[in-house]
Amino acid sequence: MATDRPRFESIDEMATSTAGALSASASQTAFAVFSDKAFRRWAGFADLAQGEQDRIFNELVVAWLVLIRLTLEAPDLRVDHDLKEYLALLQTKIAPAHIASLAKLGVTPAQCHDWETLLSLRYEEYARDRHQVRAAAMELESAEKELELEDLTRLQVFVPVQAVAIGCHQHLCRGETAGRDELFKMILRSLARFYVDTRLRFEGVTPGPLVRIRDALRRLLRG
Image (cartoon, rainbow, N blue to C red; front, side, top):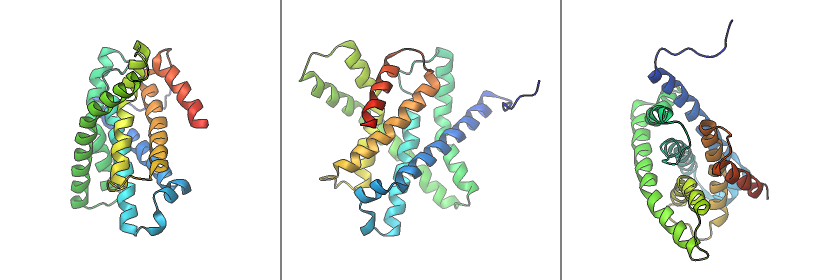
């Protein structure tokens, strides 16, 4: 019987193809945020030169790509052990997939190299910041009540998206974040939607903490 599913010669080939799809999804989502009128207003686009607007778009794309990588390597990702090995391979394919897509669009080798450098720097930065974000979140929440297991699970689940949102906001604003709360909230909400959907793509929709958190998040985002 005929099938539309692609056939792959190896696990590596499958990971490369999947990384390309994830990279395209990240770029499309980042562009949707970049094009949003509210985002442009809060980012002050009316006063920005084209070069600065381009820099902001690049930072958005990088944020979404790095978030995919942090999602795939999250220690609490609820997948089978065998799949974890595949996801570890897939994680390494994300950045090269984006670079390959740029090259196909005619981006020069020098510019592709700049992208490689930026992606590497932001990945290292946001991965490092996860530990500070988790510690700060636990300290803040424990000051209000005694933390229970589900509280710890929820805090752990959203560490990657919080770390990326905070870092992305800092870079978009060139460190001048005072009075830019609405911009941060939009970045966080947009990243959170993408993050939850990406995790569930690999975890499935089996009952678990993430599903309950996802439902609560979606109610919040609609508000």
